[in-house]
Image (cartoon, rainbow, N blue to C red; front, side):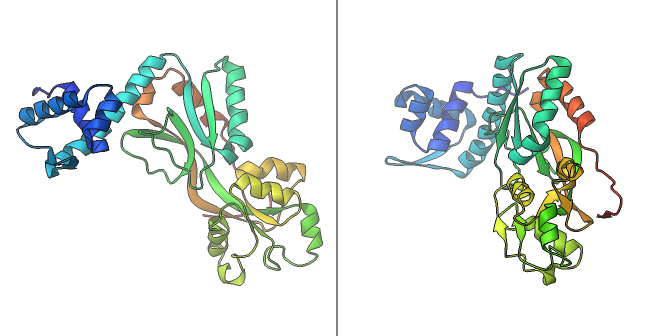
Length: 306
């Protein structure tokens, strides 16, 4: 292997490249400004090129410095993540998940895992996300369950848990109040789980009736769970994920406002950075979540549209 420059010099440069200031880099690294300057000079001599353009108190990265800074920031983030994992040893497995999924399935699934195995080191954090997302380089998680299209960075691994199928639901009394009129196409009582109304737009487009409905109208919420709660209370028709509302359908709290079930093209995935595979809880949790993932109910009279 070729010799690497001194780690302290690389670290000083990485900090200074983010801060564009030797002073702030010194504060971050708890060393003196002159030490930062010396370390970067050492690195420039080692690499045989200038990394900064110095214009009085202002710093600007050279083209070579820009290339090095980008890759070094990524490398140090990876090292930090690995070190955090090693320090935790047999510590908690930090899991991120969207709030609706947490309340409607994941919390119960993790509790069942704890009861079955005695394992209580899964630290679940429920987070509101308009669009499900995780960045393992900047967020303090070892894994996540998110709704996604299955395209993840090459340094991540994943397993698909279950697909999202959208279906309109409402309270029985709301359906009765509409009389013989279709509760979707006869009014403006749509309940939206996002401000861009994307679930209703997708469902209406897939059944070929987008132009017939004033989908801009209705009430908007920030989560699917809030929209479903409003539907249970009789305030309108919500789009639900069939797997996540089947208990309320079975109990009679909700009924199908229309029997067309549309696949959104997204699925719930357990995803993790490959470095997390060293954590001794991950394999067990992965197996458990796959085993208890909701099974799509094939109820009589429903039409499934891919």
